[in-house]
Length: 162
Image (cartoon, rainbow, N blue to C red; front, side, top):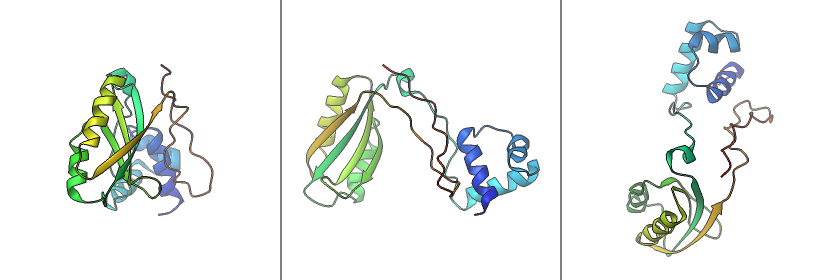
């Protein structure tokens, strides 16, 4: 991956709907060359998917919480993964080192639904406890820095305050 690939990735993180002509112009390439590079980045797995950044509050998922999940055994097996994937309110799950086995990000419409989600998490085989941190406001969520120069990527637009 070279500097042009990194610039392409940075541009795509800001707006993945750009035409290849605009993308190429931003990084000094023709539309065809930009298209070919992006195709190769997809094939290599660098670009995993193209998605839309939806405001969770606008679609009724304004409550966000991070849940530390404690377990009596290793939680990285497929039954645990499948059980977490079956809960639509779980939007991220990470095996971690530290005071818990997993870190789970949950989005729900209300705190009552968050409580119901915690009950469902606690019911997963092997889970021995949870510690929940409810987010009151998000300042920003930053895309991955692909430049490699230590400079920060511009933050995504802030989530609306509630």
